[in-house]
Length: 469
Ligand SMILES: Cc1cc2nc3c(=O)[nH]c(=O)nc-3n(C[C@H](O)[C@H](O)[C@H](O)COP(=O)(O)OP(=O)(O)OC[C@H]3O[C@@H](n4cnc5c(N)ncnc54)[C@H](O)[C@@H]3O)c2cc1C
Image (cartoon, rainbow, N blue to C red; front, side):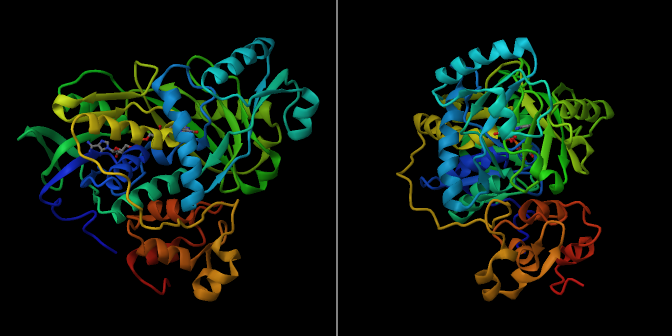
């Protein structure tokens, strides 16, 4: 395992662009700039890519039908949706286009559906259609009684957020981008027209700077002298139900949104579980990822109405994601060409889908500020390991097992993860830092026993004991 990613002094020299934050946005930006010939350095506070909000969300691949028309978010989610659709198919990111059904449970919500369809049209999405109650209950037999009306949004889907971020980062690194992990940026200075970053691993120098620091994007912005927005984390609690609940739901079941939130949904995941959530509570502490009895109770109440059988199923996990909400109802994309600085902060609720659109916006803003970029080069071929249930997993793949019998040796029985996948993750260009990182790359430890059975072998593999016992 390469340790220079996480240890030792940061690379010397002066890069074209430094990107702060290796969430889905920073990684998408790093990939986009690298393939256009920019010398990039991606600086991340934590020991892994994608370990902030990008790992803890609802993982819906949004068409953008319900964005606020006229916003930058609407434009970039629509664009990002198409780009990610194509990219996911090319590199093997698990996705499934299940379609969504937005269900109204009250007369007021029923009335609101027409406006939602109009807004979708304004956003350029013309495929919504009303679904009558007979069809609704035929397509979702386990839906709770009392639905008033519904519309279908056929393009909505689900995606693996872990693989998305890792694919962008892997392609950036393979294209020459330096990834500097475990290096929180604590200060930024203007030096010779460019920037010098103070990091825990020493200084990093670059001509141009991109702020993709998520929940802390306002703090980085302040280091550059700006006070355009303030991030107030909006906590979203979620419940993951066991795979045995998988057959209860066929589509993404959306509520009718309110001014403040998209509301609580029920959806299959690409891993075969069912997800219920998220809540939406504004909090002050950017590090508070604790679930609350009140939040989980409210989710169970909402879930009981939507799919009553669901809440009798086993819960595999609960988790919290913090949205980088600000006082504004839009992404905080701000270019400061005179400072050679672009801010891509406050990417609240749609950043997995919007990431590739945001990366294009940042690219163009940097080009306008004077960064020289070339036409995109052919990227190194990339095929991500499939950790989704909508494609063939390695334990099912006779050809893979024929090439390497370790792909037939299951280590994590709950999630059917093989020794071959674990070893491949440990040898990959961005290996996991810990068990949580291995979980995001392989799904080991993610199942109903939560590592009770395979924990020791996984720990040994992470320690570098190749026999694993
Ligand atoms: C509950 C919930 C549900 C959601 N559902 C969906 C959905 O269904 N579909 C969808 O598309 N999106 C969804 N989102 C939104 C999506 O998850 C986010 O928009 C996206 O992950 C934001 O990515 P990011 O890269 O901006 O931030 P992050 O992933 O938080 O990355 C920022 C990175 O910056 C690093 N950083 C911070 N400060 C510093 C520093 N000083 N120095 C160096 N590094 C630093 C952090 O460690 C972090 O890794 C949801 C979000 C939540 C919370």
